[in-house]
Amino acid sequence: MGQKLHVYGEVDSTQTIAHALVASGAPEGTLVLAESQTSGRGRMGRKWHSPAGKGIWMSLVLTPRIPVYFMPQLTLLCAVALCRSVQKTAHVDAGIKWPNDLLVKGKKISGILLESSGEDERLKYVIAGIGISANLSVDDYPEELRSVATSLAIERGADVSREALVQSFLQEFEELYDLYLEKGFAPIRLLWEAQSVTLRRPIRTHTPQGIVEGMAESLDDSGALTVVTKEGERMKIYSGDIELK
Ligand code: BTN
Image (cartoon, rainbow, N blue to C red):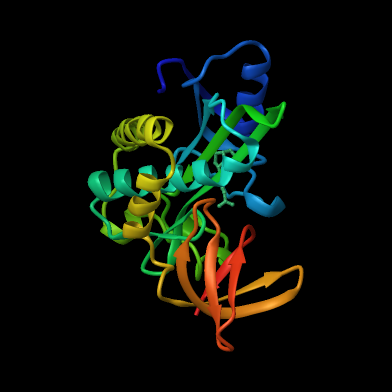
């Protein structure tokens, strides 16, 4: 992973560049890194704040020939790799909020966005977009993000080496990806559960059927979150965002 490295200054989004590289034949493991993004994108159509030189804004090309509906599993795998590399390199107590946000003391330090292209019900390629707020200071955040977002530097009181973090992430990712391709999702699921700050916590989420409130109980084989409501009903949440209460 990361053997083919493309490093840029300012780009619109590393995701857009990675898609274009795949179209011109870039192989699995190609990594796109940028110093800043003018149109960094997040999940659910949100923008991703990507100031220059302060974070890790990267996109990794993957070509697993797995069914399209397994993609949520890959997102969870990415979150585990990221969580482990952040803990090892920055020594902060990071945990995963379902599905794939990394939190430190309840605030977000990292996000993951997977974009894919499929063919015959199998994934043709996936671009795993990863944003890590490494060395941002409080002043680098717009006012509206300060209560919900933080950085590794703010939490540990010193800058982190972005190079060391990228290296460590690629190493952790490769190890888990090989395990996943060989043994499937079961071992990844256990690792995700061990790093989770969601399970056994009361949560709230919006679904097409309305607001669901309950206790997050477990992760199922597809990566969906099982929630037990106050009425004792067991529900599965497949996508979207949850709020920890
Ligand atoms: C989220 O939490 O909403 C996901 C954020 C993903 C941000 C990263 S930064 C690198 C890559 N390029 C983008 O435009 N987005 C992802």
